Length: 403
Ligand SMILES: [Zn+2]
Image 1 (cartoon, rainbow, N blue to C red):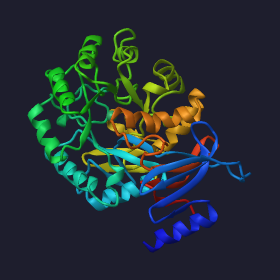
Image 2 (tube, rainbow, N blue to C red):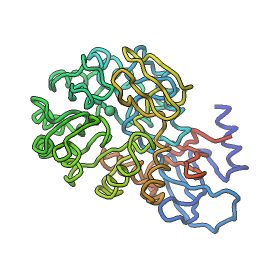
Image 3 (tube, rainbow, N blue to C red):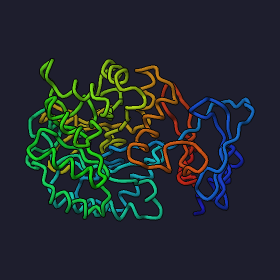
């Protein structure tokens, strides 16, 4: 608490921020129209946005809604799918994410032993109710185990735990998660997938197609059944595919599908990102980090569960399968990369990293800077095309301040 008060006081004198008695005030260049504004919040919600004169500050600081990452496997050494997951670990990961501008995220559990999946979701469900970090956890993402077992398409998921969709089993997992699973990634070509998708959608779970080799017909049936996303489009796919008949074209051509993409500069080529963006546009694209817990650690070889992973400067690889296992950068990196690759503006990049996921998951209180929205706000500079976070607020409370 003492450090919080000190940092708030520092904020008043050095950075033009004020925050006390449930009131908060912050200045910056509004990401959506580049005008200078003061944003005020009362009791955690934005109360007022007023235009101000430019004050000739030495560094341009922008303000935007906090970033929302719906696919993140862990952070700072804390693996959401790993053994011995604790609330303390999740607290550590959440605080580290605040430093990189993420105010809301979906901890993602990948294909594992079903008992482990349940155990970890139970811990995550407790974290979601935690008074300190719970506001930053809006739901969970289950990636697998109902995905393609085929090499390449399964990516770094362990084949022995991959299985056919099982509604009863999923309900048990959802129960362990206290109904917190809001997103599931699965393969539409699996036996029973279509009726499974219908059931998920009926219970409010968003279905995303990923790690699959679905035909055009499989994909159409899945979308007709209510699937509306494609998970990390262009990844979770074999290196060699048929040029006419592959999962990419149907997912690109169907306007009902919003893809998530890992625009970290390494998972997709510049041309892929540009092409996906030209087809789907800023309204129908979501940025995700797909970061592994190794993000932020020194490069080298790490054992994670039953997998040996290689962390390089930029990505995490699974050498045994010659595939990427995940990313080593937070979503804030992807904001800078997509602006560079597509020449889109900050407004569009933030839309893809905050507004769109908020809308797709009906998180009505976040994802925009408007009166009445929760004051989840980031203040940042763009330095050599990269976001540098200066301050992060969650529900009007300063949770990170640079320096
Ligand atoms: Zn994946």
